[in-house]
Length: 514
Image 1 (cartoon, rainbow, N blue to C red):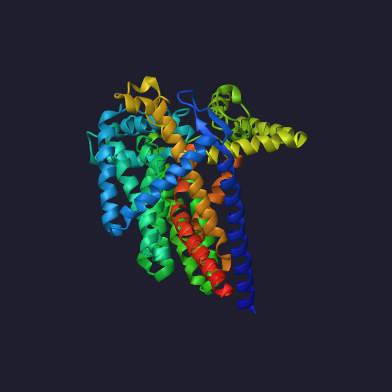
Image 2: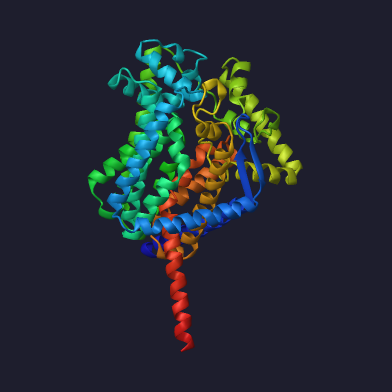
């Protein structure tokens, strides 16, 4: 009786995830085909949203033709050879750009690195009441990581962190290639996955965004690799390494708590499918390590600064995510400095800030309720500008501001100042994103959910959580590249399985005519 109940629960949950993910990616694919979202440099963070046109069609044709030509090149090399070859290319181009572009950070990335330098010198000003880390203690993990780098490499500067980002990007690509091997055990699928990972250029240009996104995704990708190995072979070593790496990703970027939830969901499904409740034991070191690491870090810095942190209440980010302040040259729901303004206005008084933010949330909910058409338009634009902005602000996040210093060379200036090369870049990435969403959609519909293993859905559960989170919370397209990248192995497999399905259908029709 119990086993039948477990099977029923498993089948229902698997169907909800499989068909739900299919519907979500249908929406993403259609949105990407219909619309193009572009960050217009150098205008702050304004994302223009327009209907796709002839350039989208031409870009798609050109990208498809390029991949078809590259496929002949790919087949000449083993996965290992291909990965090494493309890694060397990344390193060469990356090092040239690292020493050619200005080494100057801005905004939060600058504040975090500045705090790391000062804390290593014994200066605790960033920890004091009203200071950056006192307001935003979720940055303490990243600050600690950067402090560790500065201790190991005392002379490290911004370019050192650019280089570490580059190494982390190679680590991300390596881990996701190995995830493809672990999940599908198909040489050709792995070869195309490697090619697709290196062709995802927004990640490459994110090496100039020193804000923990790349480090966090690297730790998460390695953690997912050991998580899948744990499900495959159930070794204690895999469980501990998965727990450590996933916890590290959460420590660096607290938004990776969504990934921890996705892992827990997949783990529950595997337990129901295999009827092995002991598999849930992985959650013990995972929760202990992730929550414990954050708690220990917070206590350490409170003791160091002899302060108690007064973090900005979480509801302020929710309020900001519901605001429509396009006058600030940002789309509605995007980051607009509301959390800073309200904190300063009430001088860090948590109770007053919380009350004011809740009032703002209530006001916006009332506006949406009174005008459903406006509400639909607001959330549609917020969704599209977040998930269809195909550069994921990778160029904007780099040295795109004139105050960061001059960019040498006409080509780089054209890229970082919104010239013709930048236009080619966002047309290419738009075509890539359409193909990525399309491949993921094929993967989700070509087989029924019950013919797939739960671990084949981790990226989709994670992305669904990200969609829900950023639909309500404040958003930026740069935040969501981590969700999108993890779907690459599945999109590649989707095209392979789609082709196999089409060949089977064609052969069966030929046989039926005989």
